[in-house]
Image 1: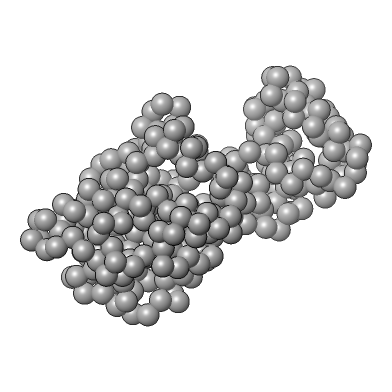
Image 2: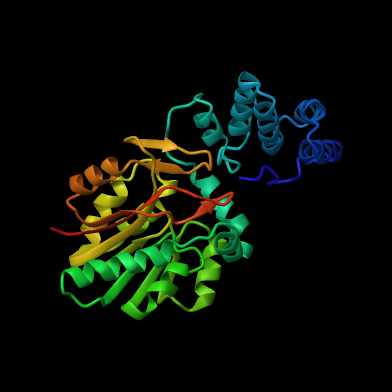
Length: 308
């Protein structure tokens, strides 16, 4: 998450020193950048982004304890935690693994919205929707069932890439996203009957029981520490013979970890157990990477589940 969010402290001198410090950080002069950021924090102690940038610099310098202090100040001075200081504290083992701050997720995707598709398709080689389509068609073919769904829900719909990939197979698709700017862009595509601004679990809680034939969650689970509420609600909302299809980042062990990319990675056994606890039956599970980072595929899973 870039630190250059919410750029004005309300103090012109603090803002100028902050900009200079960020330039020094980019140039690699971390000691000078730290010194300036300490001055900025003294001039404007409520400037959350300055505290966050100071935490980044101290982490780069190997000063874990100093970084923890800075990230905690960033968290305290911005109750919405739009820079994601809580996640940095988790990565530093200074806080227990917990849910991602909604304000961080909203700010992250609001920031990415104008160039989202170029960023994920060109820079990350994102292929989540194509993997989901392939898995869904395979499950339907194995069951000798038609690949057609009257009512679909697209959780964390973004700009509508999943809706585009599944368009030939879904009668009506409704999208949900936490980011207002993503919602605007999804609506503009005309790929959805309706697009609502909502957190994904809340979105499902508002849906009637047995009302959806297909629920998509492409690149959503990586932003959820605890997947159980999502799966429980998805199981309730799925109609008989309906499918839940998701992609997830994974790791070699069990349980949940917060990766270097500040997304949660879930073990395969953990997700299978959570599916079973929610009353879902896994119909398809494969190791497949939905994105790359620095040219390296990120380990991932594609899962399709159904009602028993």
